[in-house]
Image 1 (tube, helix red, strand yellow):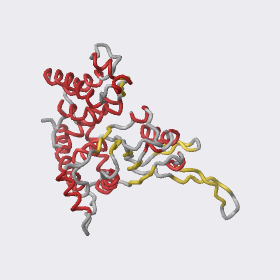
Image 2 (cartoon, one colour):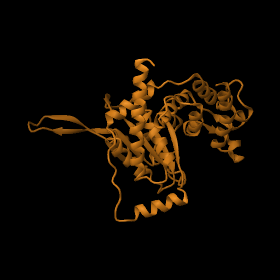
Image 3 (cartoon, one colour):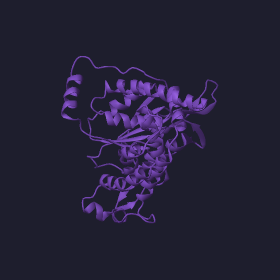
Image 4 (tube, helix red, strand yellow):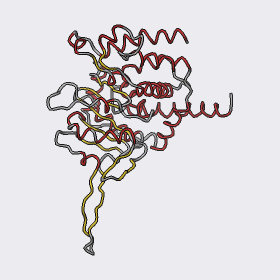
Length: 337
């Protein structure tokens, strides 16, 4: 084994141990949502953002607060409402008068100047306010009064969305949805998990999260993910999966052309590659597999696709379409590997 490769292997082993401790610490406060925790951590380790979709009361806010502490990040929360303005997120310039009578503008930073921003119920804000996040999520900087201002490093957005109550909401535009690395569906806990939640949260003691790593260590993990090798079978699987989900693609499956209005772009392939590596690292493996791609197909693709009106009328779902595409494409890739 070459010295450089041996160093990467040793780093991945240490990263796996650190992430195992982080997951255990988060699990002490967020009970019964192991898959959700793993997907959100996967998005953060990959350097991206995540959209959490679930009914109220499923510990989405608690998860984000806990992540901020465990990962050593400066976290802030914004409750999105219809009257929220872009300046409420980005910040604004105010005119101040000094002791000598001179007047000058001073910029007051908004909550977006944080390492971890929780955008609570993001679809309740107007499209104008939602668009204030577009530049920040992609470029990691904002422009205020014509001046560019860099955001802290690392910078991540974890947004929540309630799928039940849709009155008074504004659907996120496709361009913004595409900037979320993963969509994480937060489901109701199992019977046993809800029992543990009931006992843990109604007693006198509520475990306080403890830091496991620092923001600099998280940045180091994000760099390490990019060093992890990915085999040709994984690259092939990602390309087959993403391209098969586009209705206009030559040789597309008939059911895709009939049910999908628009499919995922290149960002979907990038998300699958980064997240497959991060998932392998979290599990202590030194390279991603086709099984990782299959496990991440729904979270990486479902917010980057839309069904036709006819498909919706027939009761079709994006999840079912993605599963059908994955079954046909990833089996081919796995067999080729």
